[in-house]
Amino acid sequence: MEITPLGDCAVLVRLTGNFEADPESALEKVLTAQKTLAAAKIPGVIELAPAYTTVALFYDPIRAIEAGAPVEDIFSWFEQRIGDAISNAKNASAHSIPSTTVEIPVCYASEFAFDLDDVARRTDLEPNEVIALHSSTEYRVHCVGFTPGFPFLGGLPPKLATPRRETPRTEIPAGSVGIGGKQTGIYPVKSPGGWNIIGRTPLRLFDPQRNPPVLVRAGDGVRFRPISREEFDQLAKS
Amino acid sequence: MNATAIRAGFLTSVQDLGRTGLREFGVSLGGALDGHGLRVANILVGNDELAAGLETTFGGLRLRFADERIIAWCGGDFDAHIGSTALPSGHPGLVRGGEEFFIESPTLGCRAWVAISGGIDVPVVLASRSADLRAGFGGATGRLARDGQQFPLGTNTGRSQMLVEKLRDRKIASWKPPHDWSSTARREPTLRFIRGSDSNRFTASALEHLTTEAFVVSPDSDRMGVRLDGPALERSSDVDLLSEAVAPGTVQVPPSGKPILLLNDCQTIGGYPKIAHVITVDLGIAAQLRVGDRVRFREVWLADAHRALLERERDLQQFRHGIGSHFK
Image (tube, rainbow over all chains, first blue to last red; front, side):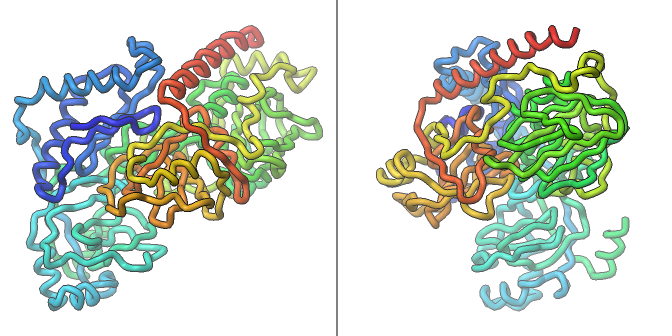
């Protein structure tokens, strides 16, 4: 574990230096650390943000000082408390975190799947084989970011890995499902983006009026279920 | 009661101190790019510091009021008026029903934060009234203000009402906060930074360039970040990083070598190496940078950043306490 300052109001806790070797174990370490640090209730902490191999801990320096942190070395004060919390929890099972699997209906029709043919060509597959592979895998959310609710999903069949588009699109419609390198993900809100778009979900992955505002969070499992254009319209209405 | 934007200006939006607790969902901090400036303006008009105000970029904002309000603003070098009376930055002024407040284009800097007594009372969405312009929610419309838009205002607090009584005969209060709180634009400012968590991924000359050369603000700078042009900051290794958290103040360097100083609307995560983090107390100055401006950087220790923040917070508490006498 390595702890470094991220500016003057956050620290970055790196749980492992090697993601590629074992993404699942990296995710478990990160989720366990997030849970442990939340339970530790370290004074001055505002929030925790997990991503791949790190948990960022955002703090209010003024509140930390009020709680006894020396202004000369607030960083070490947090470093010690983070280290203590994590080593005290060492024995806690990494698999004690309940995670849910969310099924996401996706319409892979050509009007939504701007780059399906391109992905098929690059991967040497037929478009329906791309769809079959993409929708027969269980993915896990390693990180939520880029835009609110955007899930970065690990577990893409290696055969489907496709480099990002050289020129990003200036506007990708909300709900678009894409492949970017070794990952797949969903654009929750209309935004620019460089991933290869292969379908669209009628579900809202981000809704500011909902609590929590996102459909999936780090650690959740995700499965894609292919749906027809008709079912897309029905679900979009409901 | 409402305030009506007779003219909304170039880029005006409703902002408070932003959203916390939602980064894990990818929701940006957002809020006033100079949170301290907005806090000061709110204190000046008798508001709670968490009240929402208006952030205007390049001015051109004209507001008409339906009832008596106290108004104050902090930010760049702008000319502002209530009717025909000048309202300098940092001075609370009284507007009467039917009167207008106008803020012109700036001569230095680019942004101002306008606080109105009662606060802008748009619905709270995800724990804030701020407009998230990228995701399109908050701030009533999720968008920039438009000509003719009505901003609902909360009720004047007791403090604000006392100020209304006090300013009926002289209109503009004579007292103001420290000059560098209400007037934050600087010519060729030097921003203090602490070394970034990835600074070892850059060549020695990259770090030297950062501390010795001037950088020029590029177009495409916005509430997400200030894009800078200057000597390319070379990375020593070209390994892509896994995305991890970034924060306002983070200076990240894409493959082009041209650094980007992130501001409040930045994404919650990023994969570019971070060479530096501008310290929090200097972000209000960074928020005034406009295209073509020159800016320099100077390295400090993390403890310097924390001392500066603590000192400013103590001064602010003292100011809040001292100003209490004007509300009696």
